[in-house]
Image 1 (cartoon, rainbow, N blue to C red):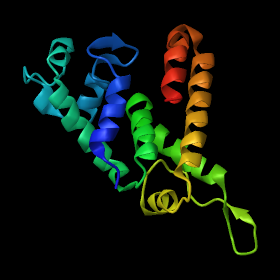
Image 2 (cartoon, rainbow, N blue to C red):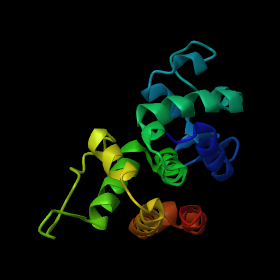
Image 3 (spheres, rainbow, N blue to C red):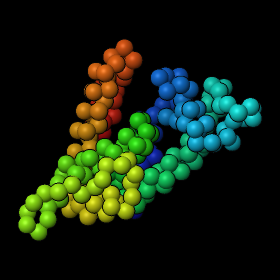
Amino acid sequence: MSDFNKCFDFVFKNEGGFTVDTGGATNFGITAKYLMANRLWKYDLSKDGYIDQSEMKRFSKEDAISVYKMLFEHNYYNKINSDDIAMRVFDMCVNAGGKIANKMLQSCCNDMKAYDKDGRTYDVLFIDGIVGKQTIYFINKLLNPQDLVSEYKAARAKYYTALSESNPGKYGKYLKGWLNRAQR
């Protein structure tokens, strides 16, 4: 089982305090949009049905830990044996969303190839963006989890580069930081 506290610390080093960026009002890497989409209305301090910038400025580290823990367990990252894998997938989940992070994970697992008894390769996982029993099983049976870490880092760099190239005006300024984050 991966250690949430180690994974949180890893993500927290990559996330700053309050900002307004392409994701809107954000604090500790959590957006107001995310809180509202997931009906986390306890952070709507004014009880007006909208979480605004002033409420996000008051969003504390303890609030972030609570939300991150829920996100971590919801995606079953707590079932991954390797902290190194869990923290990187969790970091991508925070940065780009769970579906993207999880599909990338499944794709990397498939790229590593599994072999049947006759030595033929086959895809192990259906890429659905849901970390379930098969994904967890594949990851936890790896002899060298660092191979998947390396594969995942490369996939993140490729994703960020493609995103930046698709809209340089919007995302170009983030590329250097994203690439640094991907290589941690």
